[in-house]
Amino acid sequence: MDKQNRQVVIAGNWKMNKNAAETTALLNEMTSIIKDADCKVLLCVPAINISTAVEAVKGSCIEIGAQNCHWATNGAFTGEISADMLKSFGIKYAIIGHSERRQYFGETDKTVNMRSLACLENGITPIICVGENLEEREKDITKDVIKTQIEAGLAGFTSEQLHNTIIAYEPVWAIGTGKTATAEQAEEVCAYIRQLLGEIFCPNCAKKVTIQYGGSMNASNAKELLSMPNIDGGLIGGASLKAVDFNTIVESAK
Ligand code: 13P
Image (cartoon, protein in one colour):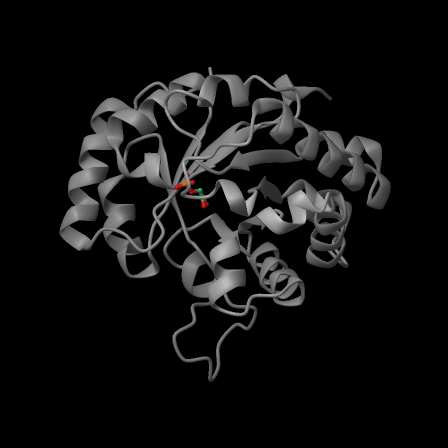
């Protein structure tokens, strides 16, 4: 199965941006211009705005996703949100293990694994983020870092669970810096991720997995990045907060 048979997913990660009123306003703008998308279009909003956002995109081709999900069904985990709660709002996608969660909130490959499995058990597709930081790239250990994150993050997954998972390659040095990986650099790592998945699961299983690139993807560089054979979509931060730019990226996926 080649690229054209995989699902292309353009996902925005709003991070900690937009209050309730701003969420509705921006989504109204987006739904009015994003109409004939060829791919899955997803916006992952702050948890507190999920219900507002789900309401705002009703009847459009935009879906709402979450930015995190706890591994337990319920319990004494102040500040956390479970897959069951997300499911009750119709949420089908959740970003897991974003580098900002790893860097600022102690997320580890182990918790990424637990959170992802909880998503899968509840019919939610985890968008598992992996990526090296600048020091690791300069030391030329990018592939080792990715290997550890993939092996530990997807530990115990069945092939079917892999099929319901998205991997987002986000080099930390390219996030919010305006410094995008070149299409070749992004392709090299995405191809490596597919190779790894082929070794851990099976080559055919790996061919079905959507692998996104994230890190300063914008209206001008999206087309080139998305044209690479192993890049099946994008996870977009800053540019997903601007309706026109985000629409251009969605259009670039055609
Ligand atoms: P930027 O697109 O702002 O670099 O953010 C990327 C990102 O972290 C998406 O999850």
